[in-house]
Image (cartoon, rainbow, N blue to C red; front, side, top):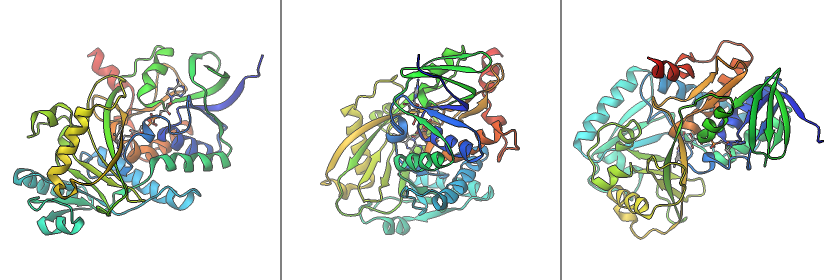
Length: 391
Ligand SMILES: Cc1cc2nc3c(=O)[nH]c(=O)nc-3n(C[C@H](O)[C@H](O)[C@H](O)COP(=O)(O)OP(=O)(O)OC[C@H]3O[C@@H](n4cnc5c(N)ncnc54)[C@H](O)[C@@H]3O)c2cc1C
C-alpha cells in the first residue's frame, strides 16, 4: 500500500483562492500541501476576466475588502518572480443614458465619502479613452486604483513562490472522501492524505466537499460567457464596464431589453496585455452546464455594439464560459466551520474572486496562525447562513 502523505495544512482546490492561500500559508512557515483535481487554474480562475476592481463593489465592507486586496496585490507584483501582466491603470464604468449618468454621479459621491479614488468622466473624457466609443455616451466614472492581471499567470506565479517556501503540490488528484478523526483523512483518485487543518477552496465545487463532512455550503454556480477578440487595432488600455453591470451583479432593477435582462448581459471589455480583448459578460443560473449558448453570445455582441459601434467588423476568435461561485448576500465565505474545528471554507467570491484572492489568502493564513486579521471577518463567517436558515 502506498504511503500516506501528511501535512499540517491541506488546501483543496488550485484556483486563484487555493493558490493565494498556499502562498501566504507556506510563507508563514506552515507545512502545507495543495491538492487539485486537474491542473492549477483549471476551474473558474482560467475562465474569467482579470479585473482587480473596486469600481463595482458596494461601498462599505465590500469596497474596503477590495481595497486591502489591491494593496496586497501591489506588494505581490514586486515580490513574485513570474510576471503576471499586472497593469495598474484604473478602470471605468460607462453610462447608457442620462438617468444612469445621474446615478453614476451619486455613486462617485458615496465612494469619495468612503475615501476611495473615484472621479466622474464626461462625454469628452470618454472619447479620449477609445476612438471606438459611440458618440452618444453621456459619460461615466473611473476608479483610479483598479488594475488588470492575467489570472492564469497569477496562479502560477503564486504557486511558484509558495513552492520556494516549501509547498507540496499534488495535481491530477480529485478529492473523493473527507473524514475527521484525530486528523482529517483525505481520499483522492490517486493516493491518501492526512492533515491537521483542511481549507476548502474548491470554488463552485465547494458544496460537494462540504457534503463529505455533512456541511451544507450554500454556493451556486452563476454562469458567465466571454468572447475573445482577435489582436487588431488597439481598442483601449483599461477595463470598461457599463453601469448596468452593477445592477445585474446585485440583482437590482435595470432598464434593458428582454434578451439582455434574461441572460443577465452587461458590457465588460478587458484589453489583455497583448491587445486581444475579452468581451463579456452574462450572468445566469443554469446549473453546471458549461456549453457556450449562441443566444447569449448574440446578446452580448449586440450590447457591445451599443457602446462600440465602430467595432462591427472586428474579428472574434472564440468564446468560453465559467462558473462564478455565488452566495445569497454577495460576500464570500472565509471562515472556519465551528462544528468541525480545523475545517475552513474559502469560497463563494462570485464575480470578485480575482479582486479578492490576495486578501482571502492573507485572512486564512491569519486565522490558522490565530493572529489578528487584516480586516474584520464577521461578515464572512460561514454561520451567517446557518442563522438565516434556522430563524
Ligand atoms: C465570466 C467571468 C468573468 C469574471 N471576471 C472576474 C473579474 O474580472 N474580476 C474578478 O475579481 N473576478 C472575476 N470572476 C470571478 C472569478 O473568476 C472567481 O470568483 C474565481 O476564479 C474563483 O476562484 P476559486 O479559486 O474560488 O475557484 P476555481 O478557480 O474554480 O478553483 C477551484 C478549484 O478546485 C478544484 N476542485 C474542485 N473540486 C475538487 C476536488 N474534489 N478535489 C480537488 N480539487 C477540486 C477545481 O478543479 C478548481 O481548480 C469572473 C468569473 C467569470 C465566470
